[in-house]
Image (tube, rainbow, N blue to C red; front, side, top):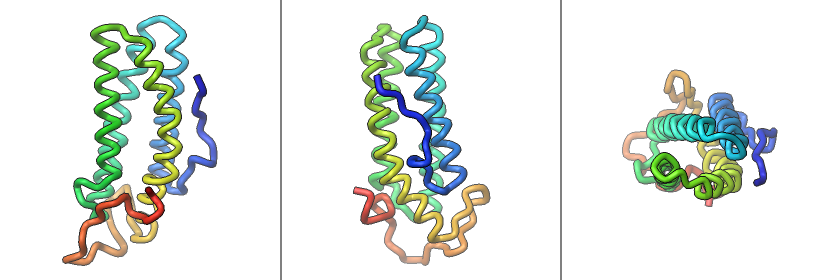
Length: 160
């Protein structure tokens, strides 16, 4: 299985987002490494990856909400889909010990994450920078004007 490692190519120059992404990549690596070992590390790795991803996506979605994104934007939709798959695979692992589906999940996340980061997350980071959004305080230097239509895409024409 091809491993995903953190590199400057994944960095978005948004420190909070980059730190969260580094953690995601590390947890995915932990899951990949656990797949060739005993069951207990797989259990722990799946739980840790799922818990982190839930918090990771919730954080980004709070930022999107503060920036005026529609609740059903495509970025949040993709988060929901990935979480659904993670939860289903975690359940299959817990209930049936289906190692093959865990391997497949890890492989798919290795392919999915760089694309997601370079498109949707990059667009979010760019929107944050353009509007002067401070993710630590939630303050916007350039608040969304009243009556502005919510962002229904991912924040950029280039996020497709």
